[in-house]
Length: 203
Image (cartoon, rainbow, N blue to C red; front, side):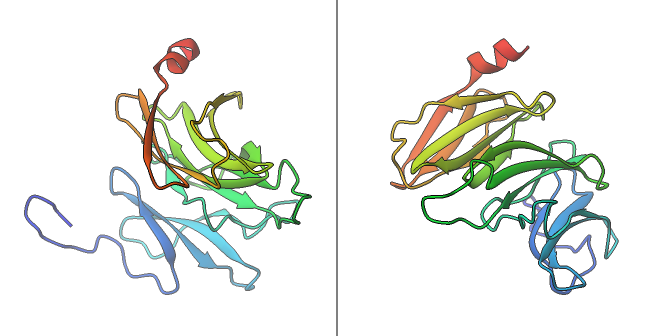
């Protein structure tokens, strides 16, 4: 949809059975979920504009058997060259592994997949505008957590939440100037966190 003219067009052929379709910032790629050919679970595919298919960038399960998360939406990096996504292993009440929920980054061509963050239950994730950092949220022993991870090094920083006992916290966006992270808590109220000091230290 062109917001200035109201004109609607279809730059991508229609894909049967696709879900959770997201567009890159430059409009040249989409990432979507589909059922794997062997019906073993959902996989992630990246397609270029005008094409009906592309490389599978995330298989239905990782080496430990963890499937794609149903909560973390896959997102392109600002340049569209990488995709972040989540995996969530099955949880047993009171016995959740610290690595049951995991944040992953992979190239848009399917190369270089690696896990860069882990928490028992993962909820959401967003890129910072420079693609140097990712903010993600989850739950650890019943407490909501918000973390910022350096994509290159994997070093993480916890950001204090006003109510860490909330049942969940979902990060929604990172402001274009890199100073603010927006998230919504379980109480359905918005809070914005200034992360300028963290970014300055990282430089």
